[in-house]
Length: 452
Image (cartoon, rainbow, N blue to C red; front, side):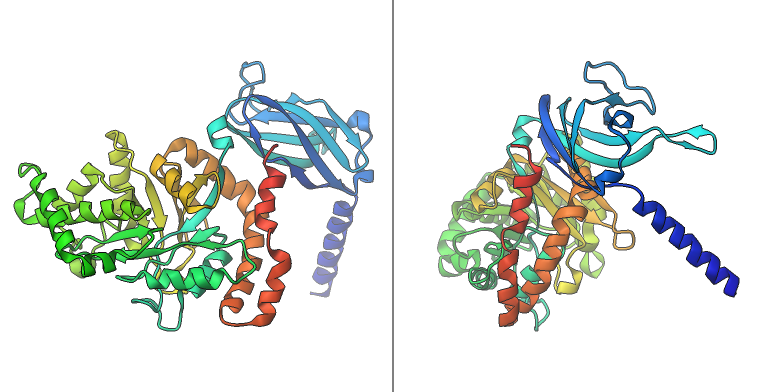
């Protein structure tokens, strides 16, 4: 046993000594560049003095789409050479990144192991080129369906606590949508307005209108829908009657006309109040049956008079995913989102929506949801693997983000900020002070990693 311990200790020592003899890539930027343009890349190395001689170094470049810069195929295992300059610990290179896709740069030198020539790799950098429309936007992560003590969430968890916990999971904004309650989300906005944080929250509510079992989210509305149809019931009833008259009886059984019409009325009123209208969990199945008749759900999904619908929602996701892709195949590419519908902070972090937007203003977010610049992401709780459901183009970019950007840069900063936010919303003054130097760090990532 003593011999084994000594052998293990010696092996670890040799490995650490070997690692210390080599330079390593410390940081590189920008990570997001314009497609089909030459961009200057900077790579910074630790212990750069341990790099081989300049004449022994090669900067290799590969386009993920297996095409050379001139459009010819790039063979298996083959790289192009990129010219570079090395000054001290900093390498710079100008590369034309072809198309919208992932790219790899790696600094290598000749190396021979066991008689085989394999390059020694001193640093690998993954980056992504974007066409102008996406390059002008930025990716933001959010969860826009959750509940607090203001409805049927945990009675010891405020809306602010839910939002703060979302930051721990790497989200950029979140919305509390308590049942029949606009005030919960307003509590979170009021609390976060007093905190030095980059985490954002907006108004929200899960709406249950009279005579209608369809659950609807109103996101970012200027006032509550529950108050509207409670205080102005006659106006609501008249609007429902108008919509009922427009339904073709051949398309839907008459017994379901009221709910279909009421849903359209609520979606329209949400937009009138400046919000985003979301059709919730079409395949939620409590008490051994779908929460609304399948004929009604299918009708609403076919008509698509909402702004977005929940592809992912807790345990009701599988059929939602299948139907979503079928609708897309039919040409009905309604914007899809992913949410947790968490009723406790412990259930947050299992799904989210990625939205490409000009900024974190709600007007920009809403506009880009309606354009379909959003995608639903589910997270496997056992493996932490992220899966995207939606448009292939955005999905491919999203896959790059949660593989090569979020874990290494964004999410670590959010988690640190989120830990303090949870304490701050509970009244910890020291946590509020500790948040101050952290403010601005997450937005600054775009300034650093997005090409100018």
